[in-house]
Image (cartoon, rainbow, N blue to C red; front, top):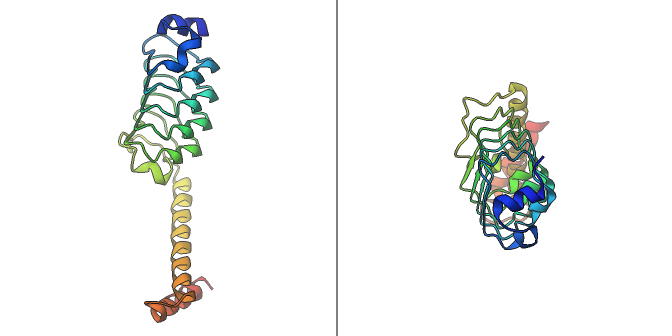
Length: 195
């Protein structure tokens, strides 16, 4: 079990000073767990924890809100805590070669990321639609997608699009303005199709 003392030794820095570190380099150290004190890495711009034996992350990693790049590839991560959704400043998140089957819903907040690398994970579902465009490293051929779940997601998207169309038409219909008559006709057609 990796202790705070182990990390102090690896970083050559006492835990009381961790909040000042701007770069954390703990790659290839055989680390199998992280103590809650890693939440003190609040000034770190780069956090490098790749090539270890991490199976999980403590919730305190959510405090890495200023990190620009987070390297967690080549570990044994089976899941991520919901708190990773707080990594909104991260431009690059490397999670390849782990054991992730899914991502927590909170990752929808990673909209500032330029690269979310998910290669070589046994993903059972696609990441949320709003961050999918940032997932430059997804190997779609390797994703084991349950066809029923995919149909449900597509159906949910279609329903959401339909609702947005109706709201748009309803607003145009309700407030008059340009295209009022067209909106009124389209809205009536949509309502009749539902019935």
